[in-house]
Structures are given as C-alpha cells and as structure tokens.
Image (cartoon, rainbow, N blue to C red; front, side):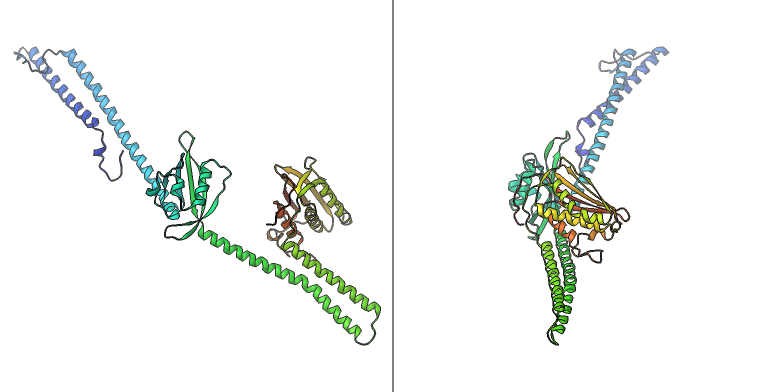
Length: 457
C-alpha cells in the first residue's frame, strides 16, 4: 500500500516488471524470427543460393504457419500484459485515493474540537483523537488495545457510563462529567454514545463523543443567576406594589380614626366603619402574603387517584354563574376513556379554576369557553380555550411570570401558581395564542402510576 512521502517503485509487485521485460523480449524475438524467415523466403524466390541454417538457428524447421501461430501467441501475451498494466494503474489510483481519504479522515478527527473515543465489541479501546487525549489527560498510544475499565481508571463515573452504553443500555442520555484534563485542569465534559457499525450494519463497537462544555456551563450558571436575580427583582417589585395599597389604606384609616377619637367621645358608626376598613385591608394583606408563600413554596401534593372528568365538571360548575353573567357559553368535550389519574385533587382544582377564571376575564363582553380532555399516550391532556382578543407576541413569554398582568385589577399570580402546581405533578402547562384568535391553555399531566405521597424535592 502506498503511503505519502515514500517511493512508489519500492511498492511495485515484482511480477509486474518481470512480465513487462519478458513481453519485450518475446516481441524482439518474434521480430527477429519474422525478419529471418522473410529474408530466407526472398532468397528462395530470387533463385539465389540459400545458406543452410545451423543447428542453433531460431528459425530452423519453422514454416509460415508456425510463425503465424507464434506471432498470435505473442499478441495474446501482449494483450495480457496491457490488461495487467491497466489493472496496475487502477490499483495504484485506488490505493492513492484510499490513502487520501484516510489522511482526510485523520485530519478531520484531529481538527474537530470534540473528543472521539472508539471501542470494539469487547470493550477495548481502538482509537482516541487528539482533543480526546487533552480532555481525558491520556495518550492514545498508551491505552490502545486496553479494556476501557483499565484505560479510564481516572474517570470511574465515565467508565461506568461507557460500560452501560456498551452493554446496550438504550435509555442512556447525554451526561455531564467533571474530569481532570491535560495540565491537571478541571473540565466539564458532556458525553454521548452511539453504536459503531460495520459494512453489513452489524454493531461492531461503540463511539463515544466528548465535548468540553466548561465555558458553556459557566455561562449557563451565570445566566441562571441573572435570571434568578431578575425574577427576585420582579417578585419584590410585585410584592411591594401589592402591599403598598393596603398599607396606605390602613394608614389613612388609622389617621381618620385618630382624628375621630381626639375631640371627644367618638361616634359608634364612624369608629365601626373605620374598623371594618382596617379588618378588610388586613385580610387583603394576609391574602397577598398567602399567595406569595403559595407561589414561592407550594405545598407538597398528596398523590391519589383523581377522577379528572368529574374534577373538571365540578370546577366548571363553580365558574358557570360568572360565565352566564358575561354571556359566555361553555362547551365541553370530555374523553370518556380518561377517568382516573394520579394527582392532588385540591391543587389540581386550583389549577383548573385559575386557568378558567383567566379565560373568562379575557372575554368581558361574551364569547365561548371550550374545555376538553383526552388521553395522549401516557399523558392526560386538559385544554381550556377562550375566544378573547388573544395575547400579543411580546407578552406571550411572560404569562407565567409572577406579578405580570395586563389587567389593571389583576394580581399576576394565578397562572404562575398554576404553573408551579403542574410542575409539582411532573406535568407541563403551555399557552398558544395569537391576536384576534383567542388563547388556548394546554395542561399535560402523567396519566399512569400508583398513588403515593411525593417527597419534598
């Protein structure tokens, strides 16, 4: 096989030059024989004396038929030689192409920033590219041919994960590992694995990809901190805004009460009115604090079998009066096959009530409220649709943000609380909306599993 930087002549098979030399010798011998025979025939026809051929003559006893047969044989040999030379040229071209492809693939593997570790079917290391060497702090020459359990002794967690992938664990997902890279620096590596297949498509080993996400992880952590601080700022601003109004009302009424008591005996009706306002504002403060605590740390759901259809109908009964008062028609489409799911009935009631009230408030002049349930594989899906004005595209990403509301009298905690409760049930809640086409809330909850009490996370 030809390799770059080496003489091609040293790799030519020995039979090729010998065949070419023999072919040339035969052609020369044939030319000499034909020439001698032709000269002898010319002398015979001219009447001149023909010398008697000696015992060593090449053409003694040969006539024209024999010479024609020999010439034909030489032509066949020449054709075979040409074919062999063509095959050799093809062989050389294919070999050079193969070497170029090998060199290209080697350069690609060394140039990409991702580490590539390959194993055979027995779990022995077959290759490791340069970036992989730097990420693992190992040398390919030192670990090639060794079992992966020995080669990666310095990274036991990664070794166990690779062995699981090699054993055919198809549930494996990408996983991050903290490793000591070349130069004793700590790096975070994200590993993924896929089968290495041969020409027939059969599994012949494993390919492990290792990506350095140290900087990405640092930026993500920084972004999470920024998001947390921003959320805390929004939350604090919302709480301050909500608390400020009742505190102002309390201060004003206390001042009026003080003014009422100062001149002399107060009027019973006036004092009672001031005290009613004070009690009302204190209850309002209590509700604000309760909602804040409910959002910041929702109670642990008590998981039991819940009849989802009956629960939805019960919540619809609670909002039916308000819907009728605003001229809103309620349309239901409940899946009869979707009966019981695991969940906390009280918390799920609050989720459906918050979402439905939000939908009703979006239709102050009437419309239609559509509620549907269906089973989607291992999920129970509850859809609440309104025919209101819809949500603007720039507002849509913030509907679950605490204290974010577009209504003057809104508090902005209904949907965030519903979102937290659904998350606590390992579910999801999504919103789909366009201006002028209404809004749809989609609540997805696990439909399987036995009743159990969730441990606090």
